[in-house]
Amino acid sequence: MKHTQTIIVLDFGAQYSQLIARRVREAKVYSRILPFTASAEEIRKLNPNGIIFSGGPASVNTAESPRPDPELFSLGIPILGICYGLQVMTVMQGGSVTRPDRREYGFAKLKHTDDSDLLTGMHENRQVWMSHGDSVDGLPDGFKVTASSENCPAAAIEHTGRQLYGVQFHPEVAHTEEGQTLIRNFVLTICRCVPDWDMGSFVDQAAAEIRAKVGSRTVLCGLSGGVDSSVAAALIHKAVGDQLVCVFVNNGLLRKGEADLVLQVFRESFHIRLQYAEAEDEFLQNLKGITEPETKRKIIGKIFIDIFEKEARSLGQVDFLAQGTLYPDVIESISPSGGPSATIKSHHNVGGLPEDLRFELIEPLKELFKDEVRLLGRELGLPDEIINRHPFPGPGLGIRCIGEVTRERLDTLREVDAIFIEEIRKAGLYGEIWQALTCLLPVKSVGVQGDERTYEEVCSLRAVTSEDAMTADWYRFPPEVLQAAANRICNEVERVNRVLYDVTSKPPGTVEWE
Image 1 (cartoon, rainbow, N blue to C red):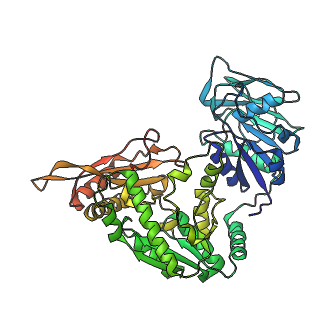
Image 2 (image 1 turned 120 degrees about the vertical axis):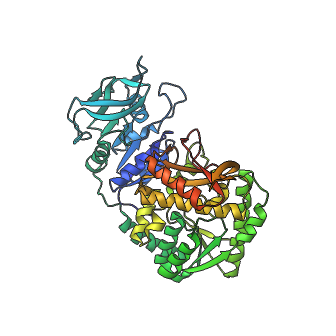
Image 3 (image 1 turned 90 degrees about the horizontal axis):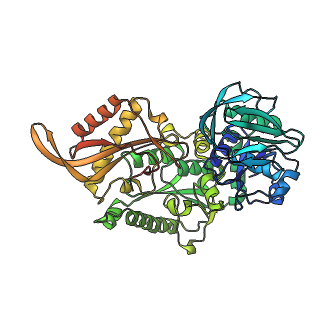
């Protein structure tokens, strides 16, 4: 897709590179992440309005530390270096970086030392987030310091004539007050971008490109009811109408009422051609006696592919396969270090289909972050129950039913999950939580219910906050919310008599148990 305004984010291995790109998009300007190895010629062809060097874990003074193409500094394009990005800019322009006795991690107060377009609107003594061991101790020729902190004399530097800017702190993180003001200053004032990136214009342009690519042919979409596949289906349907056929496989591992919701939204509201495959018995039969998590995933994935292939062949000639691939998946696949996304997330999309199906891929969301996909879904008229739902894994409740997966245990888990989510919504907390889930554990517990001894299942509740699921922290519920959920579960779900709450962050844990 063509963009009139673009900011390139060069990734030096930072954990915040995606966050930088998202902050640029929040300023309504398109951003694209490239590895630091991208050549100046490659970047010049993209005609960007500006470049941002990300942070990174390396020390700029080591021989193997990453360096961008030095020709970037001759393109005449504004460059902003953040943390390591500042340091690598400094040494490549003839300055020096050292490791002082006192490193700086955490909060600091920013003191302005000179006027700067980059810092306009950021007030004196505002809190910023520092995370660095090295610091600039010698400026390159023509540069000046525009801000400092107690432990960092060169917290912000610039060479306005060459449009080179650098900050030692992280403006992209929420801990930096008025950090988005700095991002907007760079993107809109210094790079002179026009803020025209929004989902309304994206819909029109994306639909036109899909129509041009598809022509009069047929598109097949595996619809799970999740945010990504739902938004992709709605966008493609807007573009080509009945040339889109969706296949919804009910694997019996869905949440309570989920299949009915998908059928109601896409058949009745959007009038999309939808093939429904009822396959619960087949999935459960193949999962019988299986307890190892990765084996479960492989079985679930293989059966899904077999059923999807059968449904696809019944449609006759199909030319395109639509997938809800998002930009973070694309980024990880082209990162210098490779990235684990292809292995970890293979179950989210329709992967591993037989080569003789000969589909051409359509991935209409591959330039979007998750929050943008939700905005797009709202623009397309999808209901809140679809676009604002928490992430749900491809293998569904199969990896939340810890141990053996049976029909009875799945029915129990569905009821527990429904109560937990209902109590979260009732408390008005659903939107504050990245993901809430329940697990049924492979242990039983002694209890007392109605003056009788019981020996029943144990469930665990889990809720986390996160920016992008790379890291996550457990959500601090008001005690009365957990109490209400636990009371209802023990009273209303016959086979559960004990409720736990998981307070493990990621790392060391993962969001899902399996």
